[in-house]
Image (cartoon, rainbow, N blue to C red; front, side):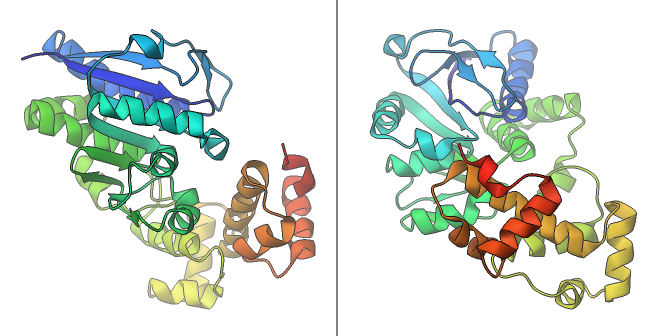
Length: 309
């Protein structure tokens, strides 16, 4: 079997965890098959890429030295809107022409769509920007699946979905037995993962199925929050049972967690977009900018204006 050549294109702001969930399964296959995979890390400007936690990864080679590759993995995280430039589009188009298969992880689907590589396709990305993506790229069919494969293009959201995707890709390329061996190395329960949806709690981790269903509905209604009675009714709970559920599993009442999700979304929009505070408030379910500002300062301990770059 010929080695599978992989190129990993990293953008500043990438998540170390997402990269690990993409790279470690490949490393496991390489070790198991003794050379079944080879990879090289590159960056769009040939300079070290800085992760969201400040770690620096130097490219293995300049972009100009790249030739054909079996799989191009594009990893973007924070700051993806700033990376959506003509220069980035040029890089992606060139590398895509040299790749047999294309994979976009975390927020990379935004950059791929900006480059026109997802037009007429179905794709997914990090759950926090799903609604913005749908508005920005109507020519791409948005999916809430953990990962999407359409033809030669794969897309996924955050870390656990990246692991799901890689295991599926490994199964397709190297067989189910190899994929199973890799999954057991990471104690990955593929059957349970496949039944989990999308959202902050819908990533692998603690939490009952009932809690995940409620949290999923919270994510879907950030712009137009519903009452706690309605949230309870979505999973056939009483408001009292809903409250006990959140206190037992998350240590806080559902109303506070609901607001936490909305405020986290507001912080992301303030840090990574040029939207005014009024528009951010409306996108996060607050009546006006003043209400958002007051809630934001009370929760985070600083004003929303301080999150601006």
